[in-house]
Image 1 (cartoon, rainbow, N blue to C red):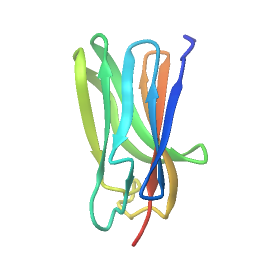
Image 2 (image 1 turned 180 degrees about the horizontal axis):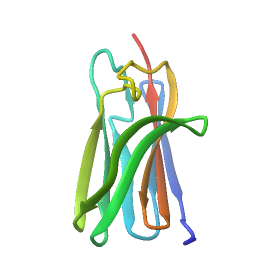
Image 3 (image 1 turned 45 degrees about the vertical axis):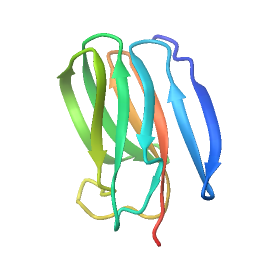
Length: 120
């Protein structure tokens, strides 16, 4: 499996930790925007760039358990891509407050970014 080099940029915005993840390989600039959201009031997008065309699978997990499938085996071109997550699980129920991980996989490369879910 290819080694993935992760660099974390942490900073605080309105009391929420924001994490941007960069990977060495095909997946670049992986992040959530916004990095913290209330699913009852909005959504978030998982954004990333590909350095070349690839088949991509994307999901959301928490505590190493699947929460939501976002995309499975989609063919994407080189460049920037984004997919929305409305804050629901696979049964379309809103998830509870906490930290979730967005996973993007292409071939044997895996990239991860975190997002915080909160409820006002």
